[in-house]
Image (cartoon, rainbow, N blue to C red):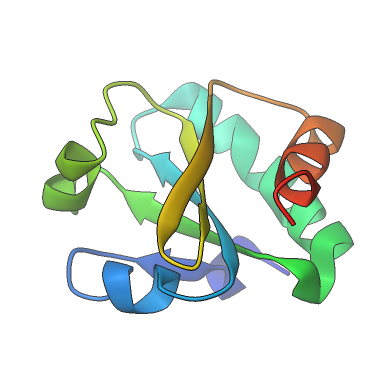
Length: 107
């Protein structure tokens, strides 16, 4: 899965796309160095997770309404949603193993 194939969320589709299933949303910004470093890690984690979870990205500058509603104050922030509800979050750069374990713990 390439970054171009990752689910892209915005203010308009966020709630519809996160309302069912297990989805990890990467709140990021184009100007954020650690966010750029996290992108290939998320791609690898998505490949390992397969159909167990979806990994999506949300640009905080383009979708500040959603980012603000979840009080995202630093990036990267990854919020895990299960059936539309926030179940946990990670802040900062993490490795693939940590992300996969974080997601699987919520199943």
